[in-house]
Amino acid sequence: MNRRTAFSKFPEIRTKRLYLRKPTMKDAEWYFEHFSSPEVVWGGGEPAPRDIGAAREELRKYMVDLYRERLGFRWIITLKRDGRPIGSLGYYKWAPSAGYQAEMGYDLTKEHWGKGIMTEAMNAVIDFGFEKMDLNRVEVFIMPRNKRSIKMIKNLGFKREGLIRQHYFDEFGNFADDVLFSMLRSDWKEKRRF
Image (tube, rainbow, N blue to C red; front, top):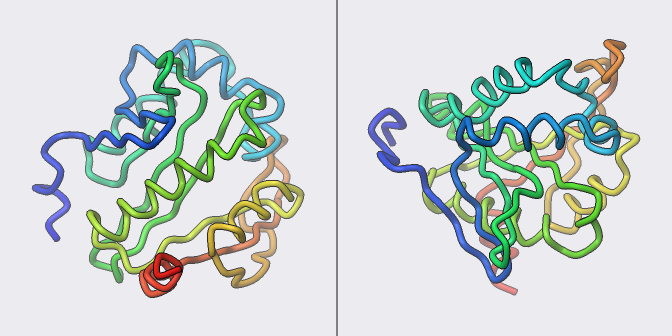
């Protein structure tokens, strides 16, 4: 697949309860508030944007330009009933030339935890990755302290590959471990049979 010519239009996804849409620079205020939330900072290990200007730059770099440069996709998660952003998820480090793989990341506002929203969104986006992006492998890196995320990823069918010591940094700039999980196309197909 030629990722430069594929997906001439950002692929929006609808599920039973959710509308996953393209991020735009109009999302800057939401981005600033969402990624300044203590729960989101703690879960992802990334520091909050220092101000709205920094939030705009991060939004551009990590969401808007990701698609424009065809390095991946980051969807804004909204509820169909009101269209309000409640989180994001998607693929980055999309590497067709290196075995058709990508890394996956996700986040959700705390008020929507425990409702199956992220599982619903992840199922749709994982299916998109294997069926439309032609991925063979999806990777997720999770800090060991994030037990909720680890439980969800396991329930989705990802396999733990191991602990990667001091792989990245936490929100304070300290070296931090990550747990690597992966899912192969064959794992997903097997899961879908049942």
